[in-house]
Amino acid sequence: MGDWWQTNIVEPGKLPLLLALTAFVVTFFVTRLITRLIRAGKGPFRNIETGAVHIHHVVPGVVLTVIGGFCAVAGGQRGFGSAAAAVIFGVGAGLVMDEFALILHLDDVYWTKDGRKSVEVVVITIALVGLLLIGYAPFGVNDLNDSEMQNRGTVLSTIAVNFLIALIALFKGKPKIALFGVIIPFVALFGAIRLARPTSPWAKRFYRRRPRARAKAMLRSYHHDRRWLGPSRKFQDWIGGAPDVEPARALERR
Image (tube, rainbow, N blue to C red; front, side, top):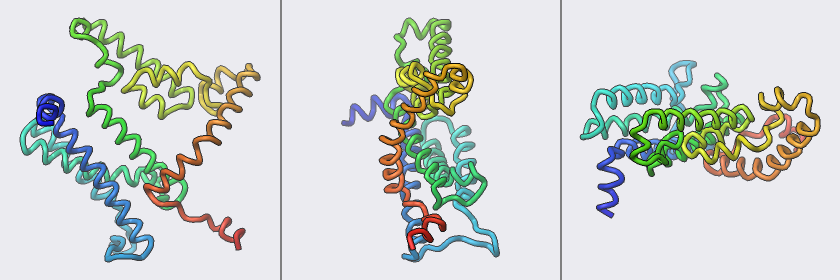
């Protein structure tokens, strides 16, 4: 275990990344626990307010992210300073990403259905950083051998091709696949060769005069969402808490 730690974490300089990821994960889960306790009216925790202004935790998160980021740049990749900066950055990023939906909508949607986006983005971030931590490099660079890495043209062409594949997957309405495809190109290739989502820019451009392809894309999208959307939302609610019941639905149930 000691040899693995030294070879895979310490020597490649990945200790700050591991510390940042750990701080990010711990901060997110602790923050969600506290906000759920506040929502339920349990425990000593309360919302922070100054007058009529509700101070969201994204505010200290931004401050900590800026401090940790600049300290990391100034402190190098090794030593106590680098480790401390990584932890500060991870804590700040956890606070910011927990309210990603609020930043996206510029509205307090924390306990609404739109608030699920925060949990989704956090899970994706953890997965992507975890892949980087275990050795994957963006755009398939880690798949090149030593001689290929020394050839600048080979490296640039590999990056360009994999970037193009991920871009096609994105235009086909598959942002998650495109993101993971940046780290694992095969994932993006899988998304790029399959039918586009019916609401994607690709479908609007290339399926406009192809009714059969458009109908097939709509049917596949329907079956995909029916199979995966429900379990995905239940998983997000299990992590971050279920959204508030909409007033209209609450009246209907009465």
